[in-house]
Length: 158
Image (cartoon, rainbow, N blue to C red; front, side, top):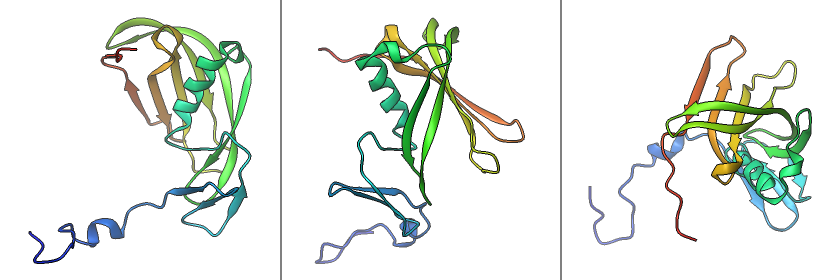
């Protein structure tokens, strides 16, 4: 479908009508969540659910000593309806198998709050691969889970 003499987009409005709400980060010291009227003061380090993996990788790159068995990392995470501190537990180092072979990775986990509908999340970060997440697992309360595993890694040139 082509636009006729205007700058109209040819994507039907209905495509965007039912998209899930996303957090909105505002540089002026307020962070709001789009499906809610709640706002939170910016304190630095805030993440949305998709970028928390990369925040953890950045923490590992900056100071690997933070990753010690039993350590806890608290990060403020914005969701569709609210924001809250997620307590990330460092389980320890594990040897795991991915599409790139065997690797040693730091296993971290986040359990949902009691009564929450959130899933538990497990992340494996490989220091020898620049702290890339090499495995992710989301687990429902009923035990169903989704595993994602690195199949290849082609680092760019420095």
